[in-house]
Image (cartoon, rainbow, N blue to C red; front, side, top):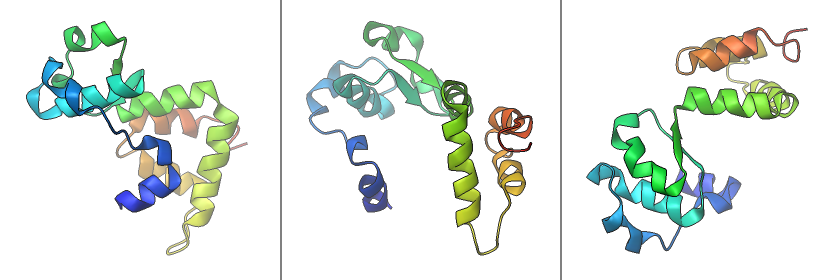
Length: 127
């Protein structure tokens, strides 16, 4: 799975952040995540677990935390035409069983309900 991810998103792999881990002030179990974000210059950490990333630990680095739902909504508002094309392509690629774009949005509603709500009202996906 990691190989597939790196194959598609080679810049997603962050190395060289280890020396920062000990100075991070968020939850000990996720200090490596914040250290990697700081090292790479990320502006956002996407996670369901906001409690491990309190604002006071993020503020010095101008990093914010977004849930996957918030992150996908922001991507949509930044480039709805690109996101619509990706979703249509994703639905078309699902063949066993075949999935329509509407079915894909319904599936997404279980994990990212606000994003799915935005999609369901989009003329780009459902003219």
